[in-house]
Every structure is written in structure tokens, then in C-alpha cells.
Image (tube, rainbow, N blue to C red):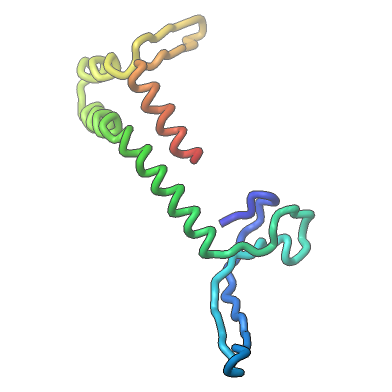
Length: 138
């Protein structure tokens, strides 16, 4: 994990909080994990983020993000399976078969001077790539 403010690594630390129960005088301990910005805690840079984050809150937020990402991934799964199948087929195909597979993924190929090639993807494939890139940015 990294600090979003300075880019430094986050380290983990087990913190123990001791308190006395007023009614009984009993001393109790509460243990909890926390994440600390290494750079801020060591004053290695001018990090303007928090120095300490509750691991419980961070972990819940990460799990929530992963559940959202999973839902998005399930939407592109049929396209992924189709293109994965095409990739396997492409690897073993003859040149004629490769041209047929390319025609399913690419709608237009333009060739210019100096063999400059401009490729326009099939809209379904382009949408798949955009969806996949969107998932990576979550």
C-alpha cells in the first residue's frame, strides 16, 4: 500500500490502547492494526496526508472497491471469454485463419507512406478494451 499524498509506502503497526474501567478499576487493553505513512512518520518529505489510518476502515474500503470491480468485471466477462478464445485460436492458426480472426476484431486498417499503419478496432472490442481499462483505473 502507498500513500496517495506523497507516494511513500504504508507500513502496518499493531497498536495497544490501555484504559481503566472506572467502576471496577480493572485495566483493559484494546489491540488494533493501523497503517502509517512511512515518509510522513519519519518526516522524509512534506506529505500533507494523514500519518495514521485505521486498518479496519481501510480494509473495508478496499473490500468495497473490489466488490464494485468484480461487478464491473462480470459485465465484460463474456467479451473477455470470446477474445481469449480468439487469442488461443490465433496462436495456432494459418495466415488465412489469422486474417479471418483479425477481421472480427478490427474494422479498418489504413496503410500510409513508410508503412505507417492506422488500425480502427471493432466497436465491441474497443468497448471491451475501454471497460477493461476502466476496471484497471478503479
